[in-house]
Length: 107
Length: 240
Image (cartoon, each protein chain N blue to C red):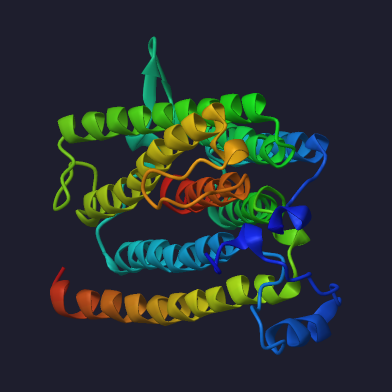
């Protein structure tokens, strides 16, 4: 029966992660509350985001207890997203440049 | 019913650590995901495709925001709520974030109690998860109403770059749809567990298949994913 290897873990770990996610969310809300700006704001947002996403995926979705065969099959395709992001950063920079050049002449 | 995971006599081969284990699992000439029920593998693969859908939304958002020369509306002010006479930035969004995280916690515990075959705590926790999810959707409806009354449209808004409205309605609307579907399935699951369907082997109304408590874990994967997507929306759309 499949559930013999079903995911069974002590309840404490869920409660800890739950608390941790609460704290991390409070931190990311604090970033806005104190109106941090610039690089500090962006890096803090990204750090808290990645930590929260990591804990949800690893513990709540049981990813750390899965076999590497499944982990690779799920996580590696997501690298493609980073490539799309890089392409679109370049593309949006070009669009902005054309708008500056062709729509703002004489301003 | 050869496919049914609960009747499989195959013993799960030992777990070899590292890349050798990956090669062994994938080259075994059997199913690649050892010890993973097929429904769970399918849910994971669906979630990968859904990850791509939401990524494309968020990357499009980045593209329109980066390429407009009109100033982007300040989310901190747009989503502020007035409590008495004080304007609290992002208050509703913060509450929604905490609610969704709480529902993820209750869902994780429901999965645990499900595998322990403790049917009543499992059903109650699923029900709590569903109620939190429903309140999240309710708050989102409130937020949409507020913004629509303030004149935000997919093509225009009074705060700045017109693309803001399109991104807002597409991204939060798609996420809200996911939450709504999740809530519906959570209520169905709660009823199944409460009635003891997974203990008595009662067949499902739609698939006519017997199911097991692993169905709760699969449901949980979907629900945690919805929470996961919100983490990214919260960071990029509301905080950035």
